[in-house]
Picture 1 (cartoon, rainbow, N blue to C red):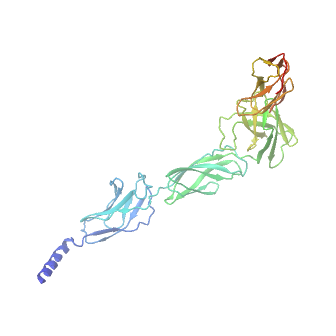
Picture 2 (tube, rainbow, N blue to C red):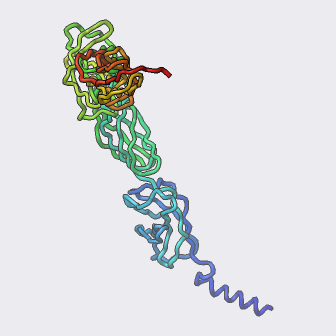
Length: 416
């Protein structure tokens, strides 16, 4: 028994100098710095065991998905090591994608692979013009920002206001921030910062603000035909416009106070007449009525001109309507009925009156041609004509129309 114990002690004494029983050990310790792309990362570590005088340490970074070592740091002789991260790493937002370890050269030893906490990206924000061309003083206005980097990102605008950009699911994102400008001006970004420190800033945004708050309140009627008259009510702050102030009513296909505004919109400036409660104007024949066009209604006043926010004030301009009887001439027996097909060409609803004073209502089915059928029982041969049309364009008298002739054979009508 003693001989076995002596042999064991002898083996231990032989192995200790070679370091084979108690070898070198390298243990990375907690990284305190934010782990940011493009930054130099301080990586502390502790060691146990003996290392030769010419030994050096370095850090290896690997992609755990592929197993590839993608980066090796400069060497150091003692803790801490410095790892210069590149400006980009594929899939860096995946918290488990990248791992690191410490390696030594003499003797060759390695630490276990360590998982990085989430790698973050420095902030860069560009300011661009918002989608709304014009606002009233104090009206909310959205500026567009294009952000790059790990959110949240804090930005300070040139007016001193501070905003936070939040990002859901990607490293690059667009976000709109709301300001309430009182005057026209150009905005810039004064400062950008996120968890990686001070970021980059570029871009400007110009905001056009009315000199007074100016709004369209209402327009009546909401549907009008060419040649018809509209009445417009508006509100403003400050002094009322004087009698010499040039003033017009504008019909525009897009709202310049909203995100629907386009540079290619169509507009018509109409001569306006002041009336109690606002203005009135006649819709000229040149206004496009394709598809019963709907226009936002603005008031344009002053020189230089300011324009009102139309809000929801719109008017639909209709080209007017015509009507016709579609039923072909026919002959019936006394007492029989015949269906008359009456069509309204143009947006309804409307009402057609025939020469026998029969009123035919026609609904609006959302198309440019609306049709209805009415059964008539003439007591004698009759030519049915349209004598009057009433629609959103008002009452139109019809003095001539071909109509349709319904012949009635002589006989006796028996009511059932």
